[in-house]
Length: 102
Image (cartoon, rainbow, N blue to C red; front, side, top):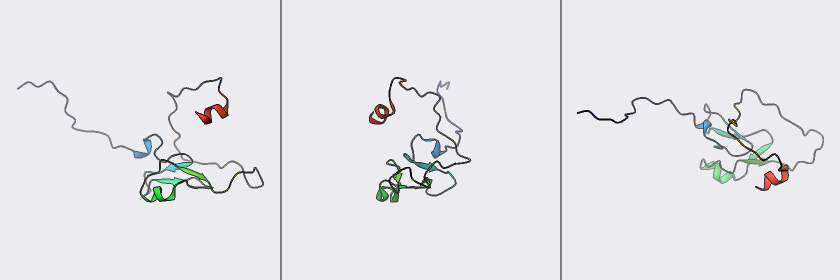
């Protein structure tokens, strides 16, 4: 019988960390860790109870409000893969505030 259809016989392993926004804002994903998501330095889960049930959608928030005081600044992260933004688009006329509201 001559059937004209596709049959999957091999598929690549899927890296869950490749899923867009898996861990939410201010979090990182590591496929070698369990759970895979953790908050970046200086951040904590926005909804801790949701993190306990492996729901990271809301991501993380600052532990303390920023006031640009001593000891605050940027953190350097190594060996991380940033999101693929090749197909991203933005409106050049928007201000940062307009972007945050949208």
